[in-house]
Image (tube, rainbow over all chains, first blue to last red; front, side, top):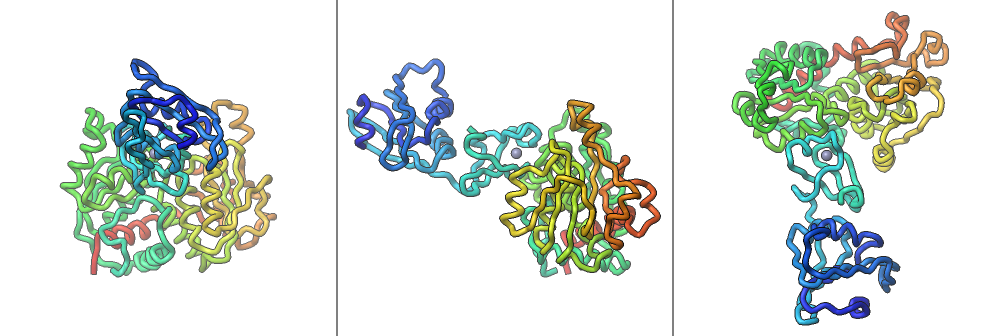
Length: 145
Length: 300
Ligand SMILES: [Zn+2]
């Protein structure tokens, strides 16, 4: 909490904390708010974290986040905390988790994979890696998002 | 059958355990000796990518079993040419057939079909991913020629990156106590993550700098395809040929294998030697595929 308070407070919105270093821009990509987004976004990159050395933080004033967004953020890291803020107060904290098998969440990066043609995807979570259930190739989260 | 192959898909060797493979090999030996029952089933062969050899082998297996064959060997002749989707084709064919054998140019096609289909799917090659029935006949060939698989030194040569027969073979072999050596052009090496996976399964993997046959019990060669190279000069540098002179450096009982078709990777002068196992290997495809189809569709 201390880390969050250090930066400018937001009234309504979300604070995505404990992001891996240099992943903030990928979070924006996940949320699809690079363009036509009216809310206010602040980003902290490579900020100090007591727990993880260095981390990123994304704060979105007036932002909203769906289940799918949360799952995609969980692909980035299993340590992320999403704080939901109302009236400057954290009303809910969530640590997005991933099921063992993730379906239709992210596209397989292998251009020769049938899933790309058929418009479906399925990955099996193997530790920090993700194995496409179809082409069997494994990917890191960096390669998926 | 006590085996868990009954009514199951056969799409990859990655998760096959030794018990299952041993049982397939044992059953294949019975079929090889002509000791088997007829199979009163309908089997669809859907070849979304032409493959004369594999199609012929499966088709022969189906006929010898006394089963009925439906399907196509050339996608251009099927309704696909009219634009029918892959999913729709599977959905239709599963209503006609007791099992579907699929060959497809894209990786993951068989596993994808398995998700859709209520009847078992057998992968006859999906792009650069897997060709698990080829791996079974390769293992059967090794077992038949050498009397064992454990303790052997096996050298894989050629395109190890895109070679689906290689990918299926290495994971099947990882169930045995073997020593694997790999030799390929630098751009066609076995993907690093696959090497890691094999090592984490306890398989000894050596990456060779030079093509060295000494001490190897099995030499498995694959084609280096011109299409894989943007640069013709690099292709020329990457080609290799196992010449009859190399036989001097090989163990006297070393066997030479190749999934065929061969271009010029293996000197034809080998054909009459005891080293040559590739034609028997191709012939073994029939009993092995018969055994597999029976294990999946039969039932005692
Ligand atoms: Zn894939």
